[in-house]
Image 1: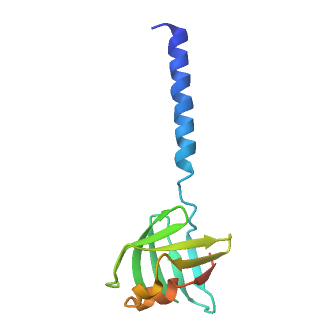
Image 2: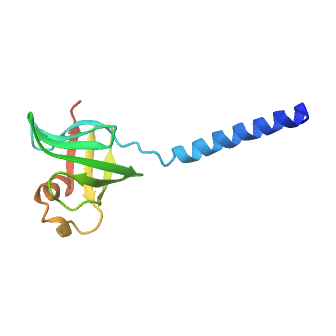
Image 3: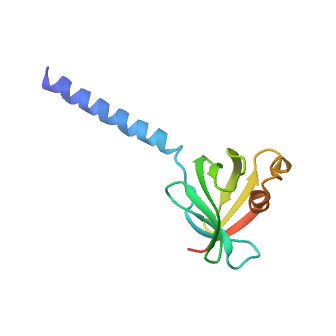
Length: 129
């Protein structure tokens, strides 16, 4: 194969890879990780981890362990140890300090999961650490 042709092919593949990475990067999550304290509380909140797990805590006590996935500005709880339904989704807004959740759909459809309903129904948390 001609060197010029090979160089053009390599450059084309490199440009394709860069363009593909840029496009797929736009779907990546910018969901914040860390400890968040619920508005009006001092030691109750949630801790989100980069591995897709989170927990609900009060002080040193963990009440629920869950897993989540993020797509754009939507977070979906995909598992939990609280015997609540899974695949429940919320829109979130994070301003660098405050994280607010709102149900996608009717929050009243999730009243049987009292803790989640209370913790995600138009609730704001502040990044602690």
